[in-house]
Length: 153
Image (cartoon, rainbow, N blue to C red):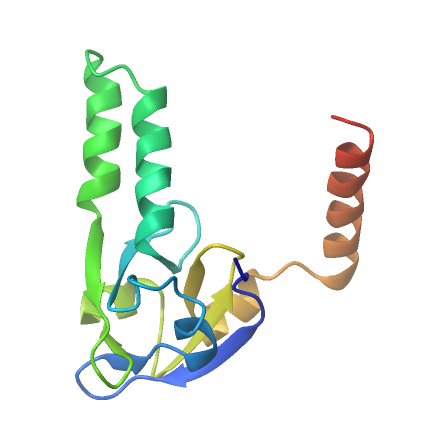
């Protein structure tokens, strides 16, 4: 499997349609190129697009960690999946993002698609630039995580 990496700018039209960058569309698994799942990121002001297989594995993992007899766990699962939507990719490679989602991520006409290995984040360009870590903080945090992985933590 190839990974979603890098980032691509794209413009929305008046209806909220945007071309899913072809570099990402080509990486969608065979049989999953006609739609993706979209949901708001729970912590960042961005949307996340999941290939169907990735979404299904994530939901199965979450469901496996929850107690179906616990009311809070049921509500957590319910909210997680109810905030998600199937996004059809039309024959031209576009998806339609509802205005409420574009507003929630502070998007003007310019969106930034950001590869996240097995999924794609969609940001309003300005929000992404302000949310990104500074170079020094990024380097420090990356080194800390990689050192921990190397040490077996």
